[in-house]
Length: 109
Picture 1 (cartoon, helix red, strand yellow):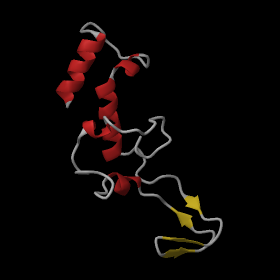
Picture 2 (cartoon, one colour):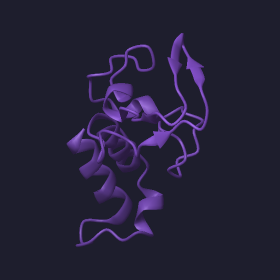
Picture 3 (cartoon, one colour):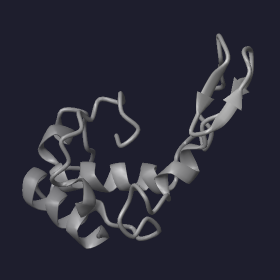
């Protein structure tokens, strides 16, 4: 993976480029896949911000009273085999054909 990223940077930006700018990132497609996969396996915040229920709800058979604080375990979701093929494997290519809009709005990046 590292060799692929290095080769992409060298072929896309050239050997003489000392720093990658934000404008360069739009050209580095495999690099973006690698970053997404890194953040999937190692989220910056393993638990998302707490939420509080406004009223009594039932989720997947569990009764959750009003005013209950809920934490979303992003780390566990990112490694759930129901949602990811080989979830513990580092595989940037898993994002190649994804139709998710990668602007930070979706958990899948």
